[in-house]
Length: 244
Ligand code: NAD
Image 1: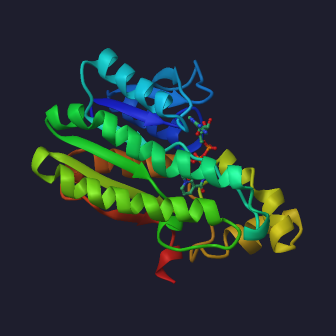
Image 2: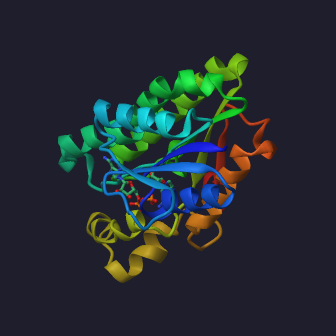
């Protein structure tokens, strides 16, 4: 990937991916709702829950870099609540960001990706794309849905040299995980200091959080020559979670 667009690039996993691709000498458009001018890549502000935001991000990357060979659809949010209390606007926001944004990015970038030599469309999905947890209806539904999109794009891109895959991490040490501790404590009825061990790490066979740089390493591999035989794949990196 020499000309890449990375979403959610100001924090956590996206930031590590943007930094890693840049270190591998790629030009990176670092798209975020709150871009960090001091972060990796070229900061670009867009609200990816809107069609205009996705369109502007893709058009800007193509214009600035003269084309595009990689898209990493990573931006995400979480909301933890039992289904009866799950706010309907949160459901809409989760679907818009985790499912509709990757679709729009693909739709708008597809022409440029088809023209590139060796293009990749990589979605940062989750172990929650293949297994569920309670109180995460919107997130789990959107992540399962995006795997369907990934498989479809893999078939459509096969003859045009566009490889599409999903990376499916377990719990990664980022603000998204830190922000859910209070809600996890409330919904599971455990004290906040027990949440990491009793709730978050409970499904991991190996009891540790994954570091954002470990996800970036997998994306760099998937986006490079070593990733040439992956398409339509959901690549687990979940410390044994989905082995259960
Ligand atoms: P994070 O909260 O650290 O970063 C998410 C970034 O997305 C933020 O910079 C935020 O500003 C941006 N963002 C949020 N809403 C946006 C919008 N409407 N438009 C543009 N940007 C927006 O989160 P993270 O943990 O790094 O998560 C990144 C991705 O990895 C998400 O898709 C998440 O579902 C997935 N993931 C995370 C974990 C984990 O344990 N942290 C595990 C598996 C998968």
